[in-house]
Length: 159
Image: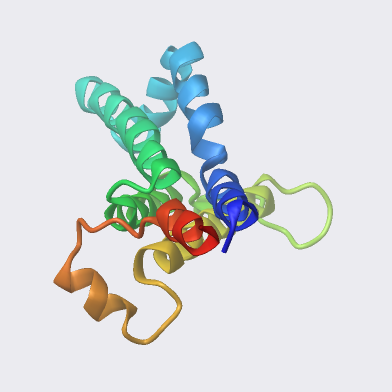
């Protein structure tokens, strides 16, 4: 690969984390009270809800940065996959919506699509964490904090 390969790898990673860094992280900062209010819907204890927002902000910034830089990116991708699944289960509970319908306006159906998007993102992060081969999980477990070095491989191949 060449510089073009490194650019393609970076672009794919940037698109994968774009939701979190900068947008969701920035939204949590700008609309902190509303974020805590939303968290309090699933976690009634206000202190715990606030703590979860800070933890989520940390996950979004630190793990997204790790994926972009290629530093311990496989573990970061696994953490973001789990984060996506947990947020889908806690805050995208379409099955609780009283107006879930297949036709017409339906907040429940809108939440269903958000739930599926979270799961799809989790799948993308899992592919990054484990790779696309059957040996990916074994490789991950052998060295969970290893970096995939996506840009170094591209640059070395182009040299």
